[in-house]
Amino acid sequence: MERIKCPVCGRMLHRENKSWFCPARHCYDVAKSGYVNLLPANAKKTKDPGDNPDMIASRARMMDCGYYKKLGEAVLAKLNDLPHAAVADIGCGEGYLTRIIKERYPESQCIGIDISKYAADAAARRCKDNLYIVASSAAIPLADKSVDVFINTFAPIELNELRRVLSPCGSLIKIVPAPDHLWQLKELLYEHPYKNPEVSFDPEGFLLVSREIVAQTFHAAGDEIEALLRMTPYYYKTSPDALAKILSLPEIETILSFNLSVYKPYEHP
Image 1 (tube, rainbow, N blue to C red):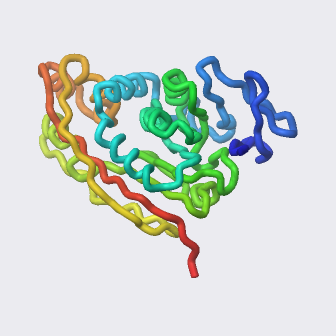
Image 2 (tube, rainbow, N blue to C red; image 1 turned 60 degrees about the vertical axis):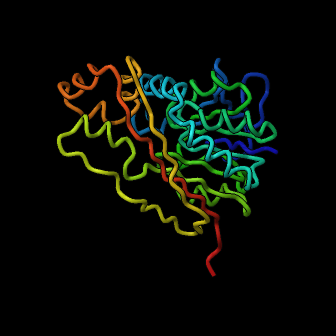
């Protein structure tokens, strides 16, 4: 099924060799790693929007250390009970979730979308069987009613676009940090740490089907500690002295805690 739309004219794209074309012959070349950039220059608010290469490399390192292990298992379990012929991860980062979904459900078409070209590049290098796209969640380059499951982790989403692209029997898996996510790390970084707010995501036009906390204890040692810090906003908002204190530790232990919710679209009466 054709699912990818031209960001200029909105007509469907098809692949010819190393490029994607629409009937109007707007052309989008496939990068060497395999991703395609569908983010128009006039849609960028900065030169390189999204996560920078350092943050993406740090995320990849942490995923290899099992950072998303429990969360990934929970997502796979949810998909087992949902139609999932086409799955799209909005804000896919370096592609961990789309990669394990393709491994577990090879018949599914998995699409990772991120506004960071560095994220899409890293994801495409790690999984050649999925399609990775540089695009904004405010203008998702996918056909109407073409996606069965949207996954969104710690990233902004545009509800109107979500409703447009999601199939009538589709689902949204929304993941946000639980109140005590990275709590022990915060205690090391800040004199007066505060917990994350309770879930406030209440999308209009969607019905909450289920909600659960997915948690695990995570250990980082040596240069893993720096990678853990660099993948979070804390690294860029913390004083050099506080960072140096953490980086001098031989190891740290902190809880990873995620709030995973599943929503279904519904029509207002």
